[in-house]
Length: 475
Image 1 (cartoon, rainbow, N blue to C red):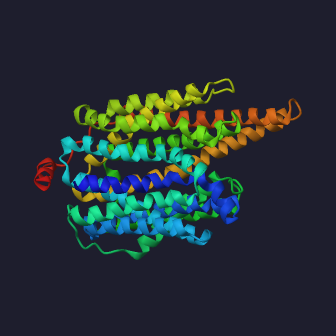
Image 2 (cartoon, rainbow, N blue to C red):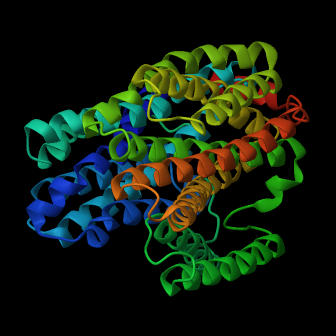
Image 3 (cartoon, rainbow, N blue to C red):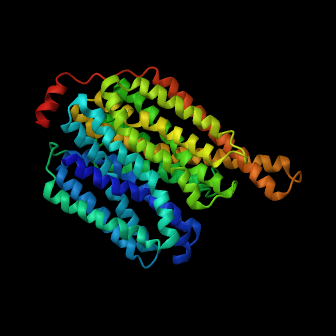
C-alpha cells in the first residue's frame, strides 16, 4: 500500500515533465513571449531537479517517509495550481519550479522506500512495477498533450493533473506510514552550496548548448559549465573528507555500482537523443503533424510499461547481466537503423524501430539500477539513489547538448559543401538527414561502449545479513 500510494504520486509528477513540450508554441502566443524565454519552462524544471536530487539523501535521513512525501506532493500540487491560473510568464515559471521541487524529491524517496522494505529476492519485481510509471508516463505525455492542446487551452494540462494530485495527498494522509529510519545528520552548508552551483551550472550550461543558445563558444554555455566543473571537483573532495557527507560518494568503491551507473548514464544520453531528435526529423524533414510525430513514440512507451514488471521478475530469477547485454544490443541495432533513415522510410518502420529501442531500454533500466543498489549496504541506499538520479539528469542534459551540436555542425558542413547544387528547400532536408545520421551514429557508438561494459557486470552480492534485516523490516 505504501509503495502504491507513492507510485501514483510519482506517475502524476513524471507525466507532468513531458506534458509541456508540445504546448510551448501555444504558451508563447498566449503570453506573448519569445522561444528563448519559453524554453525556461523546460530548462528551469530540469535545473531545479538537477540541484535538488543530490540533497535528497540528507532529507531522506532527516525526515520521515510520510512527512517528506506529503511535503513533495504539496509542493507539486501548489505549483500545478499556480501554473494553471498564471496570469503571466513569471507566475507560470514559479509554478513549474514548485512542481520540479516536488518531483525531484519523489523518485529518490520511492526507490529508497522499496530498498528499505522489500526483500532482496523480490526487489526486481518491485522496481519493475515502478518502471511502469517511469517509462509509461513520459511516453504518453506528448500524445496526451497534443490531443489536449489541439482542442483546449494549455491551462487544461494543469487543471487535469490537479484533482489527481489532490487525491494522492488525501490518500497518502490517510494510508501512508513511516517505513524508513530517521537520524539527525548535520547539514553542511558549504557542501549544499557547492552541490547547487556544481550540478546547477553543468545542467544549465549543457541545456543552453542543447537549445542552441549561441553554441559551445558562447559565455552562456562556457561560464556555467566551467564554474560547475570546478564546484563539483571541490564538492567531491569535501565529501570524501567528511565523516557525515551530504552525498556519500564512497558508494563508488563498489564495482557493480560503478559500472552500472556508467551504463545508465549512457542509456539516458541515447534515450534523450531519440526522444528529441526523432520528432524534429519527422516534422521538419518528413512533414508530419506534431500529433502524428508524438504518436510514433506511443507504442514504444506502452511496450515499456508492459515489459517493466516482466523484466523485473526476470531480474529476480536470472540477474542483470544478460538482460543488459540483450537490451543494449537492441538499442544499438535501433540507433544504427535510425542513422540510415531516408525520405522513403515508412512511418510504420520508424515506429517499429522506436518500439525496439524502447524495448531495449525497458530490459535494462530497472534491472541495472536494482543490481547497482543491491551491492550497497543499507545506510548507503539514499546516497546511491541520489547519485544515480543526479547523474542521469546530468547525462540527459549533456547527451542532448552533445547530440544537438553534432547534428547542427554536420548539417552546416553539408550546406556549405553543397551550396547551389540543388533547390534551397531540398538542401535543407538533405542537410537535416546528414545531421541526424551523425547524431545517431554518435549515440550508437556510446551504446556499444555500454554494451561492452555490460559483459563485466556481475550479480551484486549484498552485504552480510542484509537479506534477514530486510525481511524483518518488511514484516
